[in-house]
Length: 254
Ligand code: NDP
Ligand code: 8X3
Image (cartoon, protein in one colour):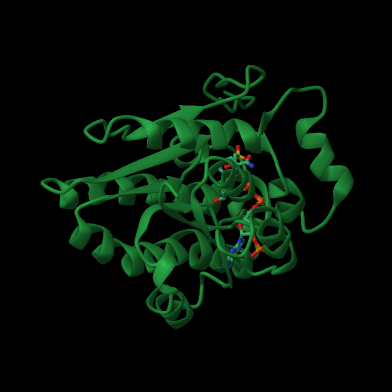
């Protein structure tokens, strides 16, 4: 066995692809998400000796702490955290956004990440060995209409990851924020609350990033020699780039 990776959001998308990638590479996997069945599928694939599954809502502070504190002995020396649990809810302009959606994004993308890092980081520092990979987004740097609170949460992820690096200077614990653009996972289906047609339109006519693309990148940044810290990695599909500044023009009289 090569090491133990703790993955949040392992039931789908980037987290699931990372689980598969690290499983194939012979790592021990601690897989967490709210949905248990996809985690059980991965456990069946890689075996009970290699996979420990935890049904976990990262918004539950006590549950996150308890899950980490009660890891079985063979899984408790976590060397790598891939913190992929996260979501967007809605694409309405801020003035029409649902406050519950905003709260869900803050609780999951910000607080859930805080709880997970807080639970796992002391062990990494004590062992003087570890790597935290956070899942940021291009939305954490580049605004777009309707991105409002989601973009805000991903800006937190970016700055949190950078500040962790400052605190961890002098240790052998690395931190990397991956910042993907448009990637086809369950992300849009969740954002549009199960609306398949609207979700499919996001990717129509493009070749978006895939979950295995991101797993390859996570694998690469974590496989570099231990003195090399990739601070952040922004990645887009070839079909995506930035637009010009938006300018609103008005008819002026007089
Ligand atoms: P998916 O919807 O496919 O996966 C999201 C994962 O997060 C699921 O496993 C889901 O599991 C888990 N999750 C959501 N809420 C919670 C919660 N409260 N507690 C525990 N787990 C939770 O989307 P992606 O794989 O695309 O997204 C992964 C991360 O990447 C997110 O942080 C997202 O913001 C980010 N990202 C996505 C991009 C994209 O275009 N796809 C681009 C840039 C960043 P479950 O529902 O079983 O709990
Ligand atoms: C997901 C990418 O552009 O939908 O973080 O915000 S985007």
